[in-house]
Length: 283
Figure 1 (cartoon, rainbow, N blue to C red):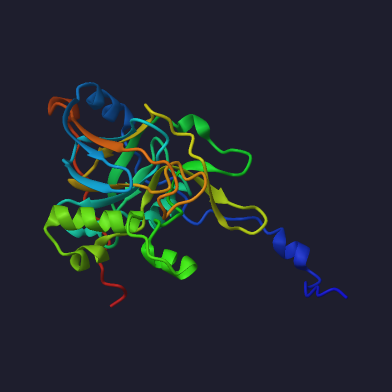
Figure 2 (cartoon, helix red, strand yellow):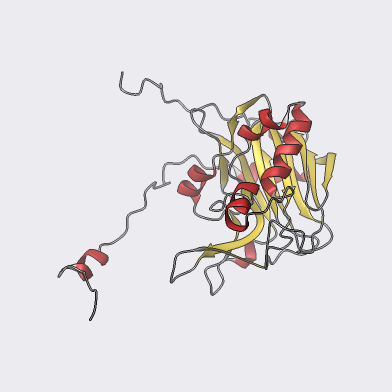
């Protein structure tokens, strides 16, 4: 006995063509040639080494470049971005995903939360751009996952693990801002999964991860459109090819480095203004 409850027009319903939710034809595009010329003049001004299963924070002035680099072995990172002058403006992974897709690369922008909704950073270089999409639908640098966290770990395994990305980011932000953990935790938000290779299974639609193609020497660079506070966790999953939220995987450090271009190289560039919506919400 079958349990087929499909209506007679099921095939026709499934055949309806999809529509892009947010067409980006009118979206302001970054001036990548300007950024590339500015990058050619940039010199290193600051760097932070993020230890395995830990996190670090650093400030990136508007108009500077942030490089996140794999320095020793395959390692993914979870990145939070904040307006360095206002923590309430933070990276909005959901809107970034809606505008640019499930994974981001060179030319895509990382957008901030409501009500500002403006570009926080623009990806100007991605050494893994060659990867594209693999046979499983996996791509690199996702904005679909959240971050490994102790609450889901407790839910699924009834155990506590304190060095997942959520906890790492919480500690790093608390230290940087001289906050308590309780004060810092509400600011931690969904991440850019740097170097992580992910997708959705075709049969069940489940979020999957696979071993990242990242190798020592690979990096991604972001142009800071506003003053940024970058907080990065070196995920306890290592290359995320097997497990995370444990001490099982082999892990490596990541590096954040700031490069500052000359003032002349950015002549004519200005930080983006906050969103122009009047916030009246119909009243």
